[in-house]
Amino acid sequence: MLITVINPNTSWDMTGSIEWSAQAVAAPDTVVRAVCPVMGPASIESHYDEALAVPGLLAEIASGEELGADGYVIACFGDPGLDAARELAAGPVVGIAEAAMHAASFLGRGFSVVTTLARTCGRAWDLADRYGMRRFCLGVHACDIPVLELDGNPAAVKTITEACRTALDTDGSDAIVLGCAGMSTLCAEISAELGVPVVDGVQAALLTVQSLVTMGLRTGSRGEFGPPPAKPYSGILRDFGTGR
Image (tube, helix red, strand yellow):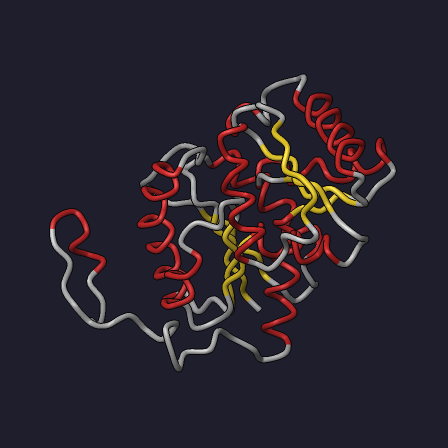
C-alpha cells in the first residue's frame, strides 16, 4: 500500500517531521511517501495562504496518481483543497483536522483544539461545524507561535503544553487535538505531562486512510466528487486543465 502524505506548505523541514510521525504508525506493508509542493506559501496561517497553497497541493495529487498512490493525507489543519483533491484522486483523501476531530470524539465527552496563531481559530471552528464535531469541540485555543517557529523555538514545547493545560481547565475537556501538522511530534510528551489523550491529526489521518484502503473503500464518484468537467485553464494555471 502506498499512501502519499502531502504537507501543503513548502517547508521541507516540516515535511520531514510529518513523515516521521506518519511512518511511526504505518503498517509494515504500508509505504509512506511524504511530499510538499514546489510552489506555494512557506506556511499556512491565513485564508490567503490557504487559497494559494491549493494549486501546489493538487499538483502533488496528480503526481501521486501517476505513481499509483492508494490514498492521501492532507497534512495541514485547515484541510485545504480537500474537496478538490477528492475529485482528482482514485483512492481516499483525508484531512488531518477531519481525522483528529473524529478520533478525539471517541475518547470522552469533548475535546479542545490547541492551534498556532489566534487568527486561525475561526477556521478550526468552521471545520468542527463542517465535520459534525461542534458538540464535541468544547474550545479552540492558540499558543501564538508561528508555524515555522514550532521546530526551532526552544520554548515551543513548554508554551504549547501550557496552552493545552489552560484549554483543559477552561473547557473541562477530556482530550486535546493539536491544531497543526508541525506539532505532530509533540503528542507523547504533552500527553505524559498532562495525563490526557493528545491526538495528532497526521497519525489519525494516516491510519484512517490505511483502514479505508484495506477495506477497499474510496470516495464515491456518482455526484460532485466525480472527475471535474474537462476544460482548458489559462495563464499560470494552464497546466491544470482537466480531461486531457
